[in-house]
Image (cartoon, rainbow, N blue to C red; front, side):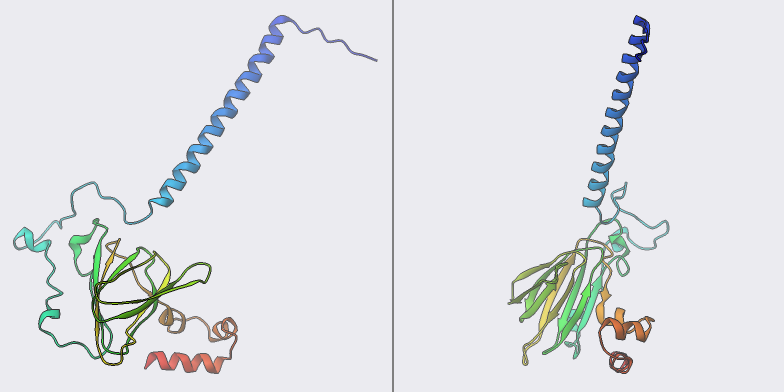
Length: 228
């Protein structure tokens, strides 16, 4: 049995119009979806220190010549102080030098007596550009595929540590000290020291023992060594 439905010309036009509207709406949704994804990707690719809407950020109250606010004197100790006997870092980040806020840059001077190491660590908010000023350093970082990239740097060499990756620096010279300058692409790069973050935190010893496939006694021995 067949059912014949008589559709008038006006009704046909209404159906065609509805199809056109639906197609137009789908195109708009597709466009906005692509736009949203593109914006999200752009936001991720530009992740870093937030942009400021002024040339710089000056405190509401500051006593002294304005130029003093943009001057950091914390590195003067490098000129007169004797070289340290243990690894030492002098920082010029937003914490020590407030004028860096919004400028997306900071410095650190790394002093390595003979045979000392800057243990594995990360900077979650910045890449690091290391310039060896004196001596030599063995350096390296590990990427997200657990591939180790190492190099032995001599005086005058520069090495980059990609943002957020675990890395280290080691002065393996048993006789001579080393000195390096690190520049960061953030006013506050942050530092997460891997040994301290893992073993000097409040993570349960059983969790650590299972994670490192060892026993609690070994974990506690490592912890006591780091706290000393």
